[in-house]
Amino acid sequence: MNVWIAVTVTGVGCYLLKLAGLVAPQRVLEDPRVRRFTELVPVALLASLVAVQTVTTAGDLRLDGARIAGVTAAGIAFLLRAPFLVALVTAAVVAAGLRLL
Amino acid sequence: MSAAEYAAGETGTRTREANAVRDGLNIGFSSGMSGLAWGAAAIPAGLSVQQACALSILAFSGASQFAIAGVVSGGGALFTGTLGAVMLAGRNALYGLRLADLLRVQGWRRAVCAHFVIDETTAVATAQPDRASARVGFFATGIPTYALWNITTFIGAIGATRLGDPERYGLDLLGPAMFLGLLWPRLTAGATEVRVAVLGALIAVLAVPVLPTGVPIMVAAFAALLGLRERQRERERVKEPVR
Image 1 (cartoon, each protein chain N blue to C red):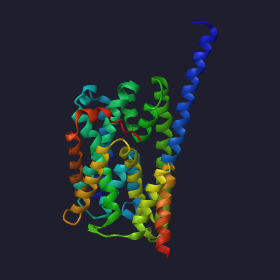
Image 2 (image 1 turned 180 degrees about the horizontal axis):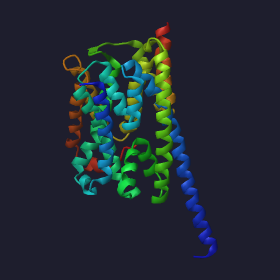
Image 3 (image 1 turned 90 degrees about the vertical axis):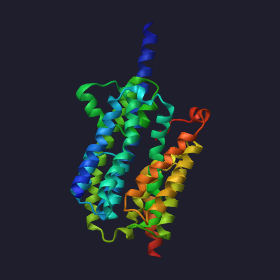
Image 4 (image 1 turned 120 degrees about the vertical axis):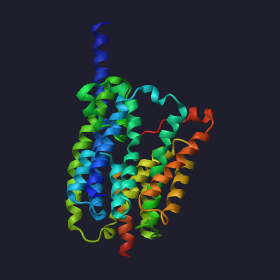
């Protein structure tokens, strides 16, 4: 599959899901189990993305101290309620700094 | 209603709408600037400047964009990777369900509004005390975020093409840090969220050596099934997580 196709499908797919929520009948969320499951799917996906991008590289486990420290620094920044971009820059700066050493 | 009461009510409405605009601009600015991080991360992942910008224009959903970049950089299965990226946007459908009643838009306006249904606009709109200021907050967040996100994507991407090794600048940290930021407010919503997150992370990491890139993320979605074991009482207590 070509990268452009992936880009286009992701773009169109994201838009259609946003639209789906606005046009769907409100009763879709009436079943609490359906509601709860749909709330928790993003939690599982986001957590797995954090983990995979932190401790793996190109399909293999790789513990990179600088990267782990950077993600930890971002976590501390979010804990301290830092703005989004500040936390991201903190993560990058911590990792870049450790790699300089 | 006396003239004085009317004037007071009018001022109240204006104050609430001004507050919604202020909330929107604040969040819109910081999220919009994060496009710099997206642009800078997209290039080392192997996307072109045009592809990075196309994703910001079309998808306008940071998590999905970073997810597809992760798959491209891993040289992984693009099909399942795309599926995972689109699934991440599934939360926007839930936001849309909640926003539909606040926005009450039809026809082409609804088609336009849909593009702005994201974490940030939902957070601002649903935090307002009434429908009018919710609508104001939605657009005051959505429009600046979209404009800035696209401009900064381009700047970040162009900048990254001129840098050398992305790891030297810690650009590989932008993806995981962004996902952590989106995950954070959800973790504080309840114990089930924490359990689902831990299980999802564990499943994905264990699956990485044996499955093609992108697929472990999809498999991790099964962790959400833990929510079905929750007791009814617990479920009712849970707050709605919106960043």
